Image 1 (cartoon, rainbow over the protein chains, first blue to last red):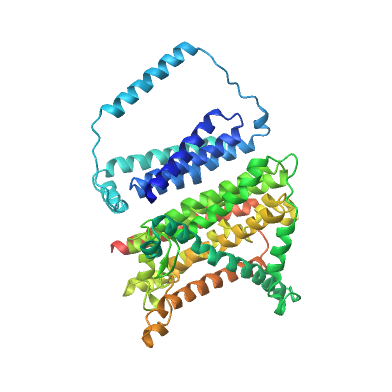
Image 2: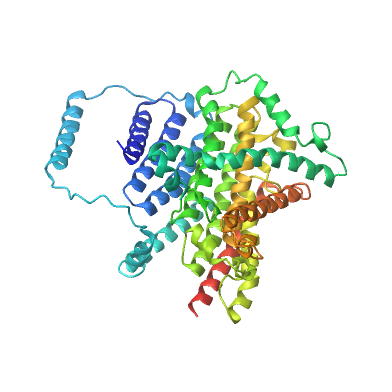
Length: 162
Length: 355
């Protein structure tokens, strides 16, 4: 077990344990903070896979932006933690059939696909090639996404004015 | 770098632990000194003497304070949310400590020489915000919650002009690596980014005022990100007691304090490495002149710490000079002035680089 294994298992455990907490906790603020840990763990896994830019963008956008907004919303709502969150067991048979089928398909896919085995190398930084691709091959999609975000921004500002 | 060196004779896992602890050796003495320094600066600006009793001119005052804080009872308010209340100081400090991994202290020491250094620092500073919100919410106190809210709103809005200014620099030099950026600003004071970097000719003359403005913008926004005056409404004593750490006592309070001072140095270090030449000396190195090469990294560390502490001193100076902004003024400054201005600088600089 070398250093990278330890780091991988650390991040994997963080991700899985906190994700379970997000699902099972009844306190919505705890759920939000566990979501922070989940997103953080996923960012770590991205970095271990050699996708440094995606890992850091994950941190900036999800942890620094979206999660903070969620927390904001949760905390601005007064007494939200006192609201009883309804959770019980409903429709056991259809649910277990559905989940079982999904799990079966996922396991089939994971075991049957011949995954490409990569040589273990020190990954290169991805940002240069990523920028080249975005600015050359995918420039149209990139611009369209920018337009989409701008429209969303203007729409949000317009709704907020009313 | 330091990791490779230690792992060559200790193995990878102990080396990772040791290399991870190195910035601590700097942060704790720095925080001790900075607290003392802040009290002295404020005292002398107000025609007082400040702490004078413990040691020469009160030099050991902070150590005495820390000893006192360690002995304090650890009080958790009965209506507080205990787990979150206890985790919050740790999370806040983790965020500010993680930033030190990518800061180049000298050419011989940079924790992780990653290509996305600055973006990484911005990313992990999100943890600080989460920690503050956690502290404010878990305290179950209106003042705390309000302080945490204000702090989060402020940090999230002021991150935008910071990132635009950083983007401006990257469009100039084409690297996001703080080590490479520092190396680009070597050999001469006028190669510092605040003087337009390594660009020559008429472009440099046009760039100098733009870069000065960019430097001021990033300095102001980082000031807001560490909640210092004039942007200290999150802990405005006159209205909110002391914001998110109202309920904290003893070592947990000390931890927030440590995180705040670590953050102050971290943002000053970022501004230093982006604009003020990083660890490079403005004059050249004594070690090179007299032929002792191992002296150069030590001198570089001295210059880096010197520039960082100088900027921290300016933060203190501003704190004791300016009144704080109101909430609406704060948002107006950010959204109506700093963001358009930084966009304008970004556009002009990009245009100049294309020409």
